[in-house]
Length: 312
Image (cartoon, rainbow, N blue to C red; front, side, top):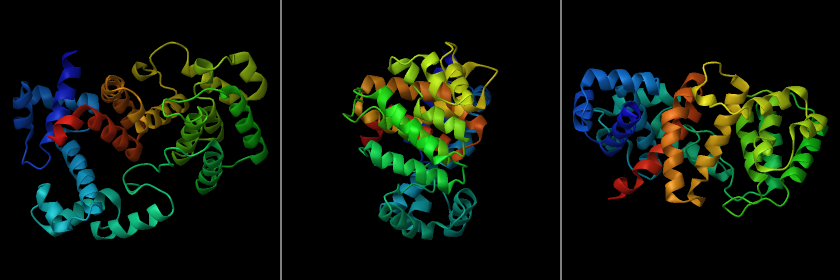
């Protein structure tokens, strides 16, 4: 529990002081640990050094400020860069383009129904998109990603998933099928293979519906069923040494969509999800190497842990 407390308190302190000239020594002293112990444990759990983490958080917060209409030079100074050129250079290294282009890119993305932080995070669908809208998004994303697709098979599996989840509703009031559809869309953007995307459509069929593994075997590809079966074996996949990449990709996509829609559950549930995400899931996400997924999970987890303090 000591390490878990260290990480949570450290992230909380960092988030509250992103505009201050903080150091590792200051952070560790503020939360009651030695600098060497804090640095070592932080990197071991988070898979990133303390100050590299601080830099990434500052860049993402800076992005939000620029999108809100603030001047680039002002934002650069707020988050610790001494010069416009220094900030621009760091921003471009992180995102691949200059901060001055951010607003224009965001306007184009929003006009197409996307997410203004798409340069930093994975794409978003509308909060209350219907299953029909989401299925069209899935087809489009698979095509954009260049994933070989048997459209007749995909449509048949979609209709089968609709039958399995029929009558079930999410906390948001939306049909439950919208959750696995969002998971499948995220998997397509993560460049998962076809069988893993199919598994996304049935990500919690074995835990949320009356469907059995035998029934799924009759209708789904063998590899897809294997992924689903491994995902519910009972062990904690986040702490397993033998990580199955396809299972982890599916579970990460599932967690991301659940975190994106956490406003529909209780504050207690949000905090529990956020703490688990930081403690168990972010380290695995970083191992997978998808920076946009990792950073959005981090952003949402910190938001739900620190939101009250940040608004004060």
